[in-house]
Image (cartoon, rainbow, N blue to C red; front, side, top):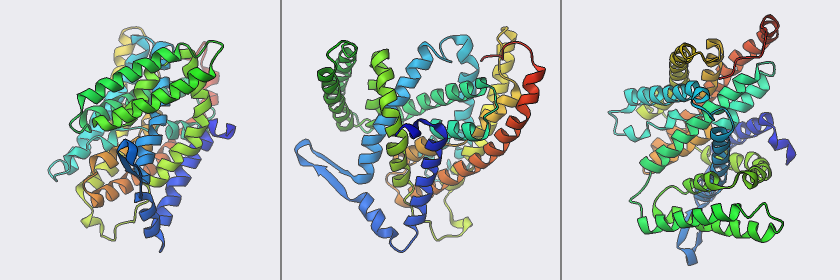
Length: 390
């Protein structure tokens, strides 16, 4: 599984899984695959009755968000978001990268009865964006990757808040209190995990994590929030070990499974004129909205940072990150499932729009990153001193 620590291989596998699912879903036996994904695997003793697709999106994907939360905590405490000066530019850029795509979506679909889909084009896929950067921009300065990581982490934080606030269903506060207690217990156990006797503590942590997931799911809050909460409270050293151990499984199994499940969509046999407004809102919002929002907000942030005497990225480097920001994929697909859960037809069109919009962003970003990478050596030779840091 070591190969799946590579951002390049992880991104390629994710894209391959989605493309394969889209192809298979539109072959003669595609209906059988869709039926298998929607088949239920209940656990009657716990009152759980989820389809295979929902076990993946509500269960396995919580592990991915657990890793995201660990990365977020690290960046906030010791990384690229550890001080206001460092966080300023990526924070403002991330905000622009959320507001503009949401506004574009609403311009297309706000009056269609599907305004609840506005969060879909606001997300950036960390794994995919970093993978494209690694493949096509090996010569770019490390500060570009650091900025992209910081922006994507903040973007995911916003996505987490959106999921928790806008996609909750009449939360059961008693179960939420139980979840809070379980999260606190998990945090305390993680502080014992660095002591000599680790196996019993690790087993206890897994059990408490499963209890937390169950309470959060049953409370009406989306179950992936359980992963976020557990990742944020975990003690740093055990968290680092857990991230290292789980990351290849997340990249090599969990994310491709989710991409395959989400992309199992039969392409609608309709003309372009018959596609719903949400389709166009997502298709335009992802590549165009992210590009405009991150570039414009980032340019404003650069001006503010320079007036404060901070050393920041060049505007061209912000443009590079802005093209990568339009790769929504994993989190956008999840948002699409949540927003259009009651409309299968619109959900299918939304999935196609996420895939197409992300594909456009991949192509554009690959061209931009490749061109910048080819020019990077000459630019580096002309510069003196250490590279500026956001």
